[in-house]
Amino acid sequence: METHHTCSKTSPQEARAGYVIIIMAVFWMTEALPLAITSLLPVVLFPLLGIMGTGKVCTAYMKETNMMFIGGLMVALTIEHCNLHKRIALRVLLLVGASPRWLMLGFMLTTMFLSMWISNTATTAMMVPIVEAVVQELFKDGEEEMKREPNVRMVPDGMSTCSSNNTLEIDLDSSESQNLEAVSIDSIADVGKSCQELTAASADQRSYSCTTHEYKQTIRTCVLMSIAYSSNIGGTGSLIGSSPQLALKGILDELYGSAPGLNFASWMAFNVPGMLINTFLAWIWLQCLFLGFKRTTADDNTQAAVIKKLIRRKYEELGPMTFHELATLILFILCVALWFFRDPQFITGWAEFLPAVEVDDATAVMTIVLLLFIIPAKPRFWNRDTAERNRAGPSPALLEWKLVQDRLPWGIVLLLGGGFALSDASKASGLSSWLGDQLAVLSFLPPFAIMLIICIMTAAVTEVASNTATANILLPILAEMAVTIKVNPLFLMLPATVTCSYAFMLPVATPPNAIVFAAGRMNPTDMVKAGLLMNIVCVVVICVLMASFGSFMFGFDEFPDWAVPQVKNATMTTLSQFSNCTSP
Image 1: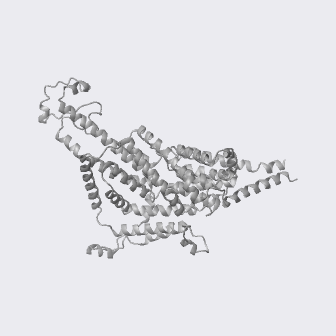
Image 2 (image 1 turned 135 degrees about the horizontal axis):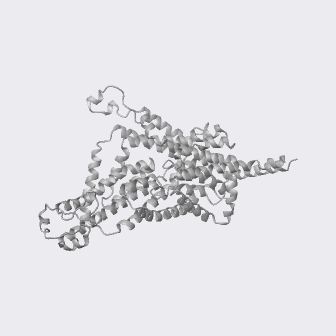
Image 3 (image 1 turned 90 degrees about the vertical axis):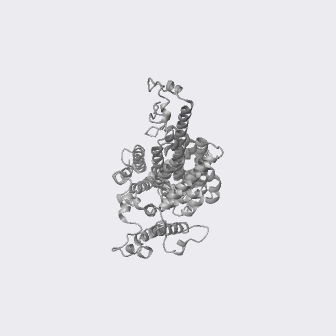
C-alpha cells in the first residue's frame, strides 16, 4: 500500500496542472473573464491544488522579461506622447510615390517599422486618420464635380445613389433638372423604369457616381487592410514588437538560460528578412485582389501631386522638431543600440565587460526610462520665446508618471506573468514531460513536417484566441516535445511564436484587424478571403526561413548540448521514482 502511494504521487499533480491550463485556455478563448483576470488564476489555484507555493507563483509575474516589456512600453509611450511617430510616418510617406499603390507601400513600410517598437494597436490607430484624409483627397475632384452636376448625386450618408436602397435623389433647383419635369416617376421604388426615362447624360453621371464610390471604397479597404497586415507582421521584427516573443524569451531563459543564443540582435537578424518578405508579398497580394496592375495615367499623376501636397501640408503643420521629440529620438536610438550590442555574438558585447554579474536587456531599457523621467521636455535654453524662457516653475519631464499610469497596458503585463506561471507549474508538476512523451508518436515525421503542422495549428488557434495566451500555452509543450524527438527546441518554438502574430482573417483576431474593420466598414467576407492566403503565405515563409537561414544561424542540424541536461534530468527523475517504487 505504501509503495503504491509513492508511485502514484506525481500523477495527481500532472492532472491538476492540466486542469488549470484547460480552464485558463477556455477562459482566454471565450473571455468569460477579462484576459488579465484570468491570468491571475495561478495565484489562487496552484497553491490550493498543491502544485506550487504562492511565493514561487508570484515571482513569475515580475521576471526580467516582464521588466524589459514594461520598459519598452514606457519608451513607446514617450514616442507617442511627443508625436514623434506621426512625424516619422508623414516623412516616410513624402519619400514614396503618391499613387494608390505606392502610397499603400509607404503606409505599409511606415506601419511595419513603427510596429517593431511601439504597440501594434497604437500604430494602427494613428495611421487610420491619415489614410482617411488621403483617400478623401484622392476623390475630392470627383466629388466636387458631382456637386456641380447634381442630377444624380451622393446621398448624405456617403453611400452612392446607385447602391443605397435603389433610390434616386434629384435636385429640382438646378437648370438641368427643369428638363425632367415631364418625367413621371410613379414610384420611388420603381427605379428601373425611372432610370430608363432619364437622359443619356444623367445615366452616364449616375454610372460615374456608382463607380467612383465603389472604387473609393475599394481603395479604402485595400489600404486599411494593408495597415493591419503590416502592423501584425511588423510586430515580429523585434524582440519587443509583440508579446509572444517576450513569452518565448522568458520561457527559454527559465529552461535553458542564455544557451540558445536568442537575444535582441539574433532575433532581428533572423526575423527582419522574413518581415520584409511577408510585407512585400502582402503588398503584391492586396494589389492583385483589389487594385490590379493597370498602367499609370495622366489623371493618376495629377492625383499623386495633390496627395503629396496634402501630406506635405500635414507634415508642416507639425512645425519644427521640438526638444521633446529630439531627446526622445536620441534616447530611443540609444536604447536600441544598448539592446543590440549587449550580446551581439559577432563582436564582444558591452555586457561582457561586467563579468561579475549577468546584465540583461531590462537593465538597458530601465536606464533609458530613468533618463526619460529626469530630462525636461521644455528646457529654457531651447526656447527662443523670451516669455516661455522666463516662465515660472520647472519643465515637465519627457515622460510623466500620470501618462504611464493611464495608458500603459497593465493587462498585458499580467498576461505575460500568467503565461510564465503556467510554464513553471507545467515543469514543476511534470506535465510538460508527460505531454512531450505523448507527442513523441510524431517522431516518425520529418522535423520540417512537424514544424509546418504546428505552425498551421497555431495560425488557426490565434485567429480566435489571444496571441499571448496561445504562446503561453503552446511554448512549454513544444519545448518538451523538441527534447523528446531530439530536435533543437528553437526549431519548433521560434516559428510557432512568430506564427502567433499571423492573424489576418477575422476582425476579432487582433486589435489592428478590429480597428481597420470598423474604420473601413468592411465586408467580413473580404477580410476572410484576403486573410486566408496571407496566413498560408506567412506560414510557408517562416517555415522555409527556419529550414534554410535559421539552420545557418542557430545550427538546427544537430541536437544541441544545452538541451541534453533536460533529458538527463528527466531520466534521473524517472530512475529515482522507479527506485522508490521497488525499495522495500
